[in-house]
Image 1: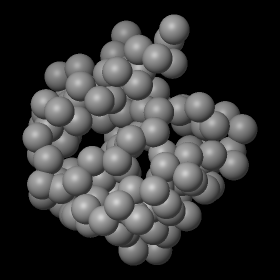
Image 2: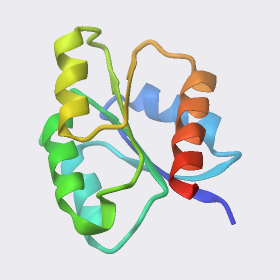
Image 3: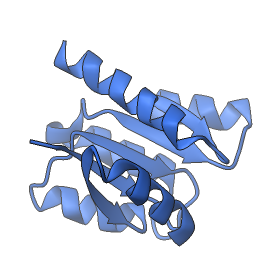
Length: 125
């Protein structure tokens, strides 16, 4: 059975790229902001991993991380943040809130895939 990957990003082009790339190995669920993603999670859905944008409308990436980590069922779900901001302070904020990794846009989908797979391997171990 394929693993489920939740992708949360308000940029349609990023969603299309990620869906196209990850669709072979994962069941890809796309949400355009943190609020939509949290509603999906609170319906009882449990992705194997989450890739979320840092800068989103309605609920930004930091608030999304806080909400995901506060939810008992998703405390340990691998979560990778994507951002166009390469500042160390943003990376530190995300990691302190509970993100497992931080990838700067533009990014190579193959690198992102390897990072997600490594996180999933650690969760299984």
